[in-house]
Length: 478
Image (cartoon, rainbow, N blue to C red; front, side, top):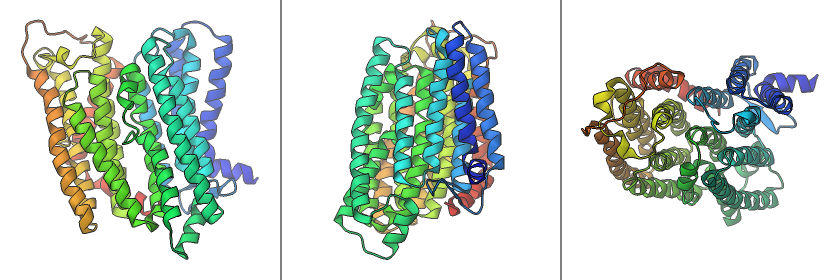
């Protein structure tokens, strides 16, 4: 009876995902033909059912399950909703996620579902060991995803991914070991109670920093950003859009809880994290200026946005966490909109070069306006939700101490630099040339997703109050 209650109140979406993983494995054993569309439909239905099941979970008060290893509350449920929305949109925006390997479609979707499962578990994790297992499931799934095509570029990308993730795993394990040695426990709630009544020491700060560095890998910030650019370039567009969202949302949810319950006891740790975030923003802004490959450009853009998210997390108060929630929710539609446009373009003409987008506005104005909306939102300019999201984060940082104000000034300067890289792409669309590429004018799913994401980006900017209120309420129940 307790197990059934635990499943119903805290583990129901994960159970449904597990069922569909097993279904994919079984179908992959017996079906060996081109069934991509059917496999895609089956897995979208699975994610939708998982999404609906959230309505049956306990929101308040916080429900602890499986010997306090997992929890369910308003905060975790909101992040699970964002994970499942992202997964549905990414799959819909990707018309042929595995063009050359269509006989392995069920195998492919079992990997996708495994990554989703790892993300959902990481969001609910209430002890660091459960979080470690969830992260490894997510990492292994993303490793197989990047190398699924099995060509030279994908093999190189997957190799770099696993080497970088192994480094992050080592740091994370060392951090767990030190923390367990200090307090004799790895349960987040228990550690919080311990350090409410005793002072911290240098070993606590060291252990916590190692744990943070292990999680930062999922966000792609310094020092794990060196190979991230190559990983994006060697992966398919569909894979890039997936790994640019799902792991980041899960890592953001877990890291936010750690800062509120454990890392808040060390102001030095908060400042170090803020500095790492700032360095990541500056590094990615400068690196993106000279890019001509659209996937490498989006990779640097991903680092910039992860830096802003990490900066807000480091403040570790309810207001800053509400800004993180708002930022993540808007970033889902901004990011998928941008990737959808590039997926469409690459599908038609198999090009990654930004210069090949020249003059696109004059041939396809509506498509270009939707793309420009997404790029403008990535830049954080009005009238898009990206502007409101960055303004919200800057406001949250400005409400803290004077040192953070210095970091805020530096972040604003880095933002000005980053504007140049986004304006560069917009200018390319308006550059006239005689041999402009013509796109298929038919309305397909990926194009509809692009227009929907662009529209939502504008609507959130015009009417942000409702989403801000939801973000603040959710952050309060962390």
